[in-house]
Image (tube, rainbow, N blue to C red):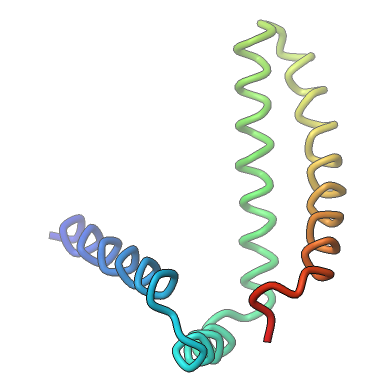
Length: 104
């Protein structure tokens, strides 16, 4: 029962996201942003970013281990990757801040 509910909930969320992307107007976008501000606290975003970075780094380590067959090499690649990805993401964000597309 729980699984069925969660699956329906996920399907509903996916449909909402698609609707927002395809049929979003300025008014609905503002409502969505206002709702996000109320529901999504900065600390939650920070924890989500950190957890995603951990998932990404573990993924890189597993793939590196599979490709090289060496655990030490995989851990080295993952350790370097976690730093370079943060630097690249920062640069990516700064560049996007310069782009005026779809900004209010």
